[in-house]
Image (cartoon, rainbow over all chains, first blue to last red; front, side):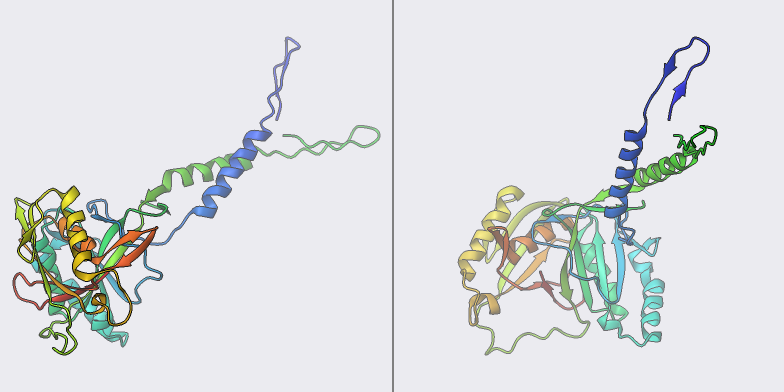
Length: 154
Length: 173
């Protein structure tokens, strides 16, 4: 790409080829490491950290992710509600599992609770899920080790 | 960027305009930069918590007495950790390490068949208003420790004492 200024006879040439090369390098970098997988994160929830947890080898076969905010409100499928009001959504999830001929007791409730949430609220949430037949729970924590994960999307 | 192709007479020219492609490339780059997000790895402590009454291991299989751990709260902050009536203070920086060391003393370092690690159990109770992070910290302290970059497991059977209904649960680190 050449930039020419006419009139005074001078020619300004700026070779932008290296810049374009670097741009392509950056794009290739982002395309290689990007991960569009749904991580079900929520900005309202800051997880506690633990040095022992590690990312699971594979996701749970049937999982329901429940976020618990600091003030004790649950967020399921993008809807915020009180723990006592989770019955409708939990019942719907249980029915969906039964329709697809899966056992509710085989599904896993992934509990992403804020680190400053009341422990009693976490127990109440677990108890509420138990009422609808859920038996497996996963308490999610942030790992302190390893490489951070790069994801795309907000 | 111009690509010139000249014949012997120098009259034929083929020009390719790359400006549009560069514009799209920058659009893509801006998209990736704007949507790029770095998050920490997340892991799980798995719990099995059936609604039915808890099934404890048959007496003849329980060779190690059940340890009892209680976490006290003061407005959400950790005010005390008690294991078998032994206190560890409330300084999270040292209390969990001391708890972990005490668990190692109780359990030992053997992990093979017939070791205490296979049969050890612990029950964790806590004040309802305790911050959840302290529960996770206690579970981490009793679950194991890291040695040479590898996780050495301590107690695998961790139960939460119910606060209001519900049976005890078993946590699997």
